[in-house]
Image (tube, rainbow over all chains, first blue to last red; front, side):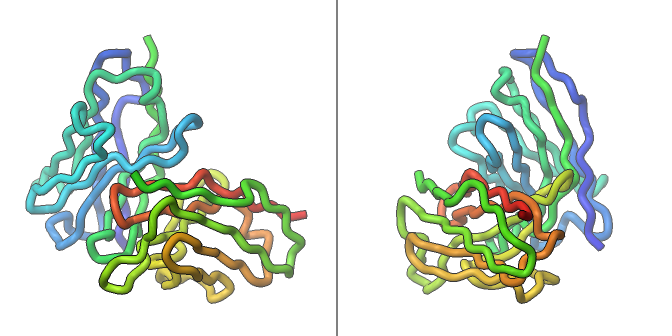
Length: 120
Length: 111
């Protein structure tokens, strides 16, 4: 069964870069699927961040794309998120997801989520 | 940007009764291919959200038929029949026609 697991620092200083990885198990990342990130904060609720196809094509939220990079590591069967110049507004639980929107099936698999706090 | 708005925000329900949640979109979610790009998710306590329904009315794998989605264009409804204690959680709609956007969530609780 496909499983996703986020990992990364739980605390990031303001103005620095938030980096997270998502390990995919029970399936190959180089399938026809897209892979993405969604975050959840008290202030903004659930917010889609961006997605990537195994070919490397990326799709970013317009509100975040100037600070965002989503990438793949096929050799490790994982994908990653880098968000730079973070502020307290980026404090949230970050989920990695399998993005099946391009097949009309929404975000059908979610990781358990990881809390990232932006604070000095 | 397409905004989706849910109501009510809180929904107390007696076990065994039905519950309905409304989701309204600021623009039509009906694509020229005939599909409505509206998904429903539930987030149970301590868990990530999980997909319930996609394309407005198609249940995701493993979702009981007590859950049904309906609507078209800008008005959608999630109905839960014979509510159980295990249904407690926050229900979200999400428009998938453009940049994905979630509603504020509706908290279902048991009376």
